[in-house]
Length: 310
Image (cartoon, rainbow, N blue to C red; front, side):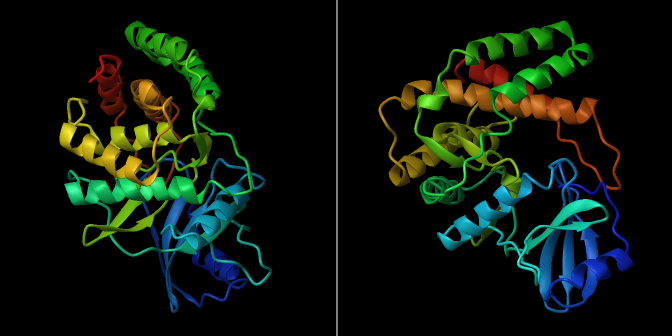
């Protein structure tokens, strides 16, 4: 979540004429993340989040809005889209596809380690999310799956040193032999980092930013969460946090026998994906009014540790 497109008061007022959300009081840019322009939108009827989609085409966005609508009606705390009078949840603002969603209560724990209570709540919530999405009728392959990683790695070759290019090539070769499509799966969040989970009194009050969601192995989604929530500064996993997360998840969504043997393979590809994503954001930076690029070295360290089984 960044701001690449500025919205004038006049443009916002005209946009809101199609909604029953009251008059705008303020619009405040949100600086975290890298993909879309996001604002807190305060009106005389409450607070919402306004998103302008910078990369996704209008044809691809309804999947994500329909998914959060589905999950919110199946017990998962996620931002329900606001519908215009026409019934549409996706409209246009400043020449970009745009949507307004609920602003959920609570705060993220970004900047500190989770407590065991919080990590157990997260494991349970992730298992519930996977089960709730199992019957979602729309199919959408993971947009940041192995083909995306291979293409991104090719673009990055001239920008990286030979040692890093070799690590990426070796890991892609290893992952090409892992058949994760045979693992149990369905809808995954794929980006459930600490800044995308809101807590109130150590209980989860909201999950946000589903714009990397798609269909993939559920174990891969658990690996994304484990890397992002349980890694120490040197990249190694914190054993108490990672075990608590695992136990809470499998108590909610028991694993099949063929999943556990691929656990470290999933941790490795999850680390590779976010290393590539951050390298891409740094080397192909887009201009914006408010932008924030996360440190690629964090996931470089995590990948090196996972390749050692740590």
